[in-house]
Image (cartoon, rainbow, N blue to C red; front, side, top):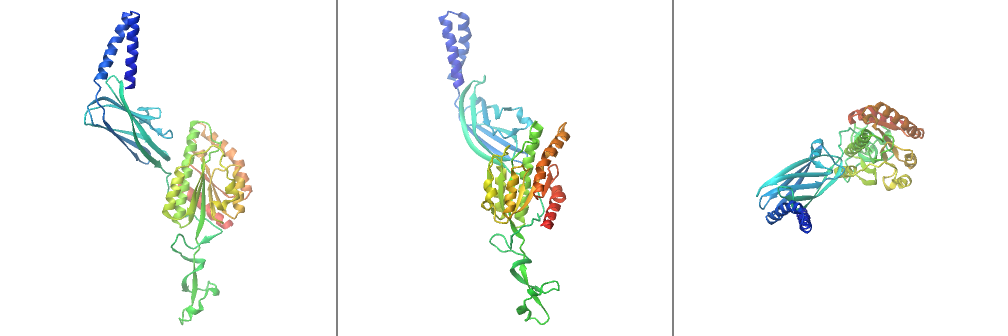
Length: 431
């Protein structure tokens, strides 16, 4: 309506200027468009639309399904426009139909009919909100005479992908016999009484239960204690990106893949640790710190998944880790096992030393994203990356930290069997 009124006013000005200046050409040029616009405004049809949208999530795409129902007279042309979250990239097919960061469609719509339209966006990890849609109605020359906003807030999210991983044989200074509120222990070498078993030659004579054995003439019984296998585990996932691979779009793509793979590894390890009965807490480092209080079970896994979904990359060291270094028990229980997944930077050395000094067992996994770089000079980029990183990592090794290198072009299964499992077994023997 605003565009039509503006054109009417423009041609009225031209018409008046032609009359004032007695310019016959200007009067003739403005008379016919002005007459047409006045006639179009007088015959504008009533508008009554019902607009809805549904957002479906698949493994690789978000599918936006629009439905526009015409409840009044036939309309010559309708436009529907919606701004999409900037973090979502349009796929190649959608780029031909999009204008910047918006989804746009246009079509005629007859009376009592429904127009359906689908649009695909490449899915990325994170939480995204779709809110207002702008719908406009125009005549057959495209002059808008009705515009309104349809508010339909919908939120979708895509979490990191959790892979399958076997049990993770961590070593801790402190274990306990059961998890949760139900004691479901196993026989082993703990302290809590578990039951009676037949005495074997390799057992200590101190474990013989003489009172129970006295009730059996030919059977010697010994006490069996509950296995202390469960432990407190703190998982720290670092989303900070350091300046060793910055530059071209190929390097930026490699860094984005590096972050997604790091979060997927964190979620995979969290799933494995919780399935093993451990009590797990999470701390994420990105644009801000996010913390999930230590707990057990499926609900805890869901909380960790939501926290990892929200991680945004940071290109600097703006996060102040002083509290984690000086007062780590604010985040993780005393003598817990800390799994730190990070590319590491020099400022992290005091942090790890502080955690080690406080009695935590530390397992450090260092992602190596250089193998994800593609392009003409990927071998040179990989060599320069290793050259820049070697000096930094050597400082950690000199302080006694055992670093588990993760070449990110490897599959999770290969990393688990070839790197992680042998390294953790070696760590258990070293302690």
